[in-house]
Image (cartoon, rainbow, N blue to C red; front, side):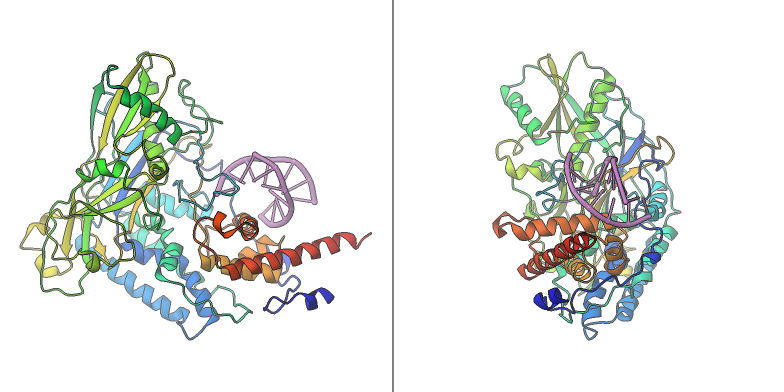
Length: 582
DNA sequence: TTTAGGG
DNA sequence: CCCTAAA
């Protein structure tokens, strides 16, 4: 009591448990390792979607609700719901009209079994930087999505001449319903977001925040559009040992760049046995605001990722720009491997290189007439992307992110991977390229028939400012090694989420994470109480360090202050209760 | 299943 | 985020 007087945080005050423990229910993650996952074949699906935007919103609509809960005048849940329904409706309509809505490039690679940790995620300190490594979701509630995913068409690709080819192209159009179905789920919790007691108006941050909070789900829901056409081409060439020393030196660079943690895995000589695999680290949020350096693989890709069949249409103001990305080009890879290495190890090595590049915070770059478009905040029109675009103006590329810190390494040089140390090495340059073409078409239906657009069998509706609705979806087949789980993708907390977390902790205190979860993140399936606990931990840490040392999306100082205050308060409470019995 | 902490 | 001992 005295304490509550002493501490005034500007909210209703800390209170005792508001939610009976009895309310506990099945929540949180189940046992991860038991999930049946296939570790034989995995694929990266790179697809451009638009629908992403619509679908994404559903699951995270609860975040918007934070705002609406705080300020009923901004917009109501019902409004949002309706809006979402409408948007979804139109998207589904699009689906029906065009059949296939996205091109999916799948690269199925034999996975190595085991695990490697991403470089930037180990706690503490650096977990705010960068973004997702990918990884499939593991919660039970995600099973649905996974099943949808499993229906996707895929290609078993290989590197010509180096790895025996085993390509398969299949079609499966049965997943549309699943998309729609899953996309609707998010609404259930529209009204479940807790009311706040502070009365403080959080408002809805900027669009970026909103996007941040929603984008994370894109891959969960959009990847099921059946591919219409898939291309996969690897051009491989052997490079002799006598190659200039440049590459040798770069070998080290690569090794620095990809310091695989060999902890439990990445045993290049042994055959596949080990724990969770981390291959297929491919999912990422292209809308991440972190920018990529000039110098990276993107340059190598620029020339190859192209737009095909981009259409020009005039007289349609305000129309959505529809894009179809048939494929992406993957950054060039270099591999260093002993001549005595086995084909199997070569395969694993290549797999390693591919997954590493894809897994290490890959970004999507946008090229307009060969120039990178960096400003994420610009609209398509402002950037010059419209129906009036001429062919081949727009391009996409995948670019590793880590290049920024190693000026010399990755600029004009591809990455290397090595499997041997002092042995004679064969350098294998793998231009792992997927032919890139992209179609841009007008959204006007009547224009479809009379031009090349008709060839564009896969259309993707792109609402303005949604060039970033690109996603690479890790993909794997069902059945297989059950002991195969992947690290979840990193999903940095948005300010909005932090706000909600702080709010809940202020009220419930630390140590009741399940309740916090239920109270403030009940709708956010991807946030477990453990996540919240961890986030709180990092928040406290963040609040204690200097602003200069903080990374990631800056958290308002006001929030951090509340974190410290609440943390201090509840720490005291905890001590008190512990001392009481004595 | 949840908590609590170290990794 | 992951992993786990404890509760």
